[in-house]
Length: 328
Image 1 (cartoon, rainbow, N blue to C red):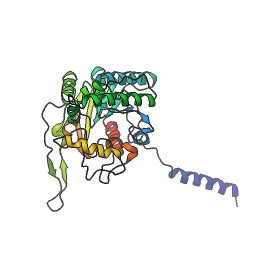
Image 2: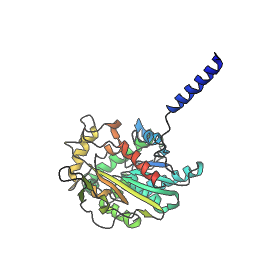
Image 3: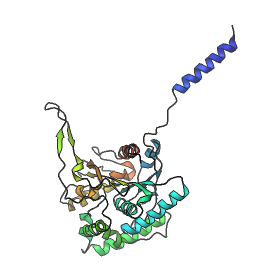
C-alpha cells in the first residue's frame, strides 16, 4: 500500500473541504467612496462610546470604509461646515479617495449640505437623518423666551466641556449660532442660501397602496411625494426620519427617553422628540416614519431601545448597500 500517495490525497481533500467552509468577506456595502458619519448638535465623535454607537463597525463589516470626524457641537451650520470641509479635504489629500459620502444626523445633515453646496466636486452623496431642514419647534420655544439666556449659557458650558473631553479644546463654541441654525427662521435663511435638494412644496400626507389582497392586505407607502431633487451638481441626496411614541417606544433605563417625551409635546405634528416628520424631508425620502426617537436614530445611550423601536444599525447597513448599488 502506498501510504505516501494516500496521505497526499487526504491532505488535498482536507484542504479542499476546509476551503469550502471558508467564509467569504461581506462586501455588499463596499461603496466606491468612503462614508463620513457627521454628528449632530451637541454631538461628538467618541466620548466613552461612539456617537453613532455600533454603526461604524457594522459598516466596516459589509465592506464600507467609515470615518467619524469631530466638528463643533455648538455652532452654526456654516462654522461646522467649514470644519467638516477641512476634514474632507484632508481625508482626500491623505488617502486614495476622490470623493466622500456624507451621512449626517440632526444638524449633521445641514452641516453636510453646506459642504456639498460649496464643494460639490468633493461629495458623492449627502444623506440626512432626522435633520431639521425646516427648523425645530423646540428651538423656537427657546428662542426669544425667558429660557433663552439660561439655555445659551448652559449650551456654551456643555459645548466647552465636550470639546475638552473629546480632545479638541480649541474647538469653537457658539450656542447662539447653533440655536439660530435650527430654529424655523434660521433654517429658512439657510435654505435660501443653500437650497440644494430641499423640497419646495408643502409637506404632504404619504399615500399607501394595498399590494396584497382583500383577505391578506399588504400596504406600501409612497414616500416620494415629499421628495426634493435627487441629484444637484453631481451630488446625490437622500433622507430619512422617524416618529416617536413615548408610551410605546421608551426604555425605562434610557434617560434620554424622558427628556424627549417632554420635548415631543412642543410639536403639533408627528415627531421624534426634537424634529418633526415633515422637517426631515430632503432629496430622495427613503422613509420618514421609522419608529424611533432622536437618540434611537444613532443607537444612542449604548443601544438602549424601546420594545417596538426600529433597530437603527441595520438602516445604515442597508443604506451603504443602496449607495453601492448607485455606484457611489
